[in-house]
Length: 117
Image: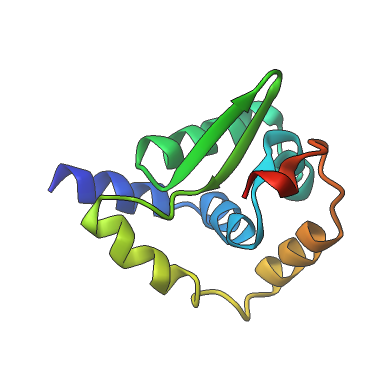
């Protein structure tokens, strides 16, 4: 039960949901996410830490870069069940649409981000 509670708490924040929706489109570095959300880097890092600790996202360190992506190979039944549902949720939300447009037009600070998928 504790794992499910941790996952649901991670999903229970507006900015973390925004991050998940962005990462559904492509992996991003912390700087890209910070720029799109318009939040402090420390705040974004904390949100990403919560998502990582819940097993929802993965991070890849490459020198000074931390690249985040959704954990598509999650062995946790809760995550593997919820992630396909989340991909359909909030598609018509105006904030999510704006975020996704920013992701689409974003030139990643990490030049090789598109190659990491």
